[in-house]
Length: 286
Image (tube, rainbow, N blue to C red):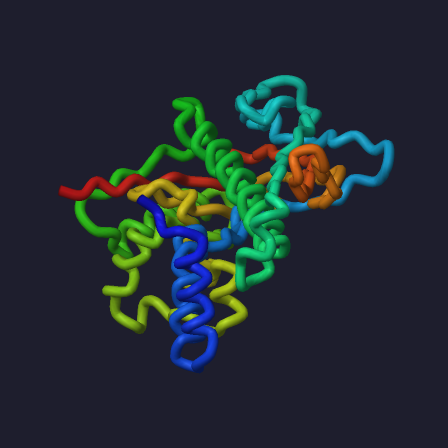
């Protein structure tokens, strides 16, 4: 049985009178937020992001010898385009609709409205990255792709990652980003410091960039499957992300249900037009 409202107010009144009590209250409110930590989009770093002018169509050229891979109009499928050379990148929406009961607003000691908007933004960013890495998977898992998937047995080594760099550099491209799960990043922390130079500046940590290796930035994301690593070339040579409507927040209240709501959405396209610029690495651990 849950605690009664009277008991809750009794505990609040008792603890709010002292500094130690207020500290305990703050700690109790932080815990649920830690379980839903804000997500920062990192997948965009792999693509050339372009704001579309009004009336402009997201049409781009691809290499004539390979297919381009784009997210479909509904945002839930990936389309391979072999011909023609010019490819239209479909636009789709990613949306969130956080709602807050009016009765809950004063029952919280933190700004519930601001927090709900932050969580809505985080969910959109997470969904965006999910689609980006799904597109990368579609490219790398296609048997006709120029770069074969590199399989690693055991922990990630510098020699294995060097092979991933070589797979891209043999096409006269430069490696710019390495995407991986935090679990696999632990392998890199065990390397010699002469190999890996971790950058621990706070502003870089907030963007998801955890360090650099041989001129490429190492980026961690929970949206990258554990045991999977993507080695990518520079954004302008890999793919495009045309943005028609950037993240927009509108009021969407429901007075009859006594809810304060927000409609959050963005309209964009995601496409990878150069499979030569990406290689996938799979780690097989015992």
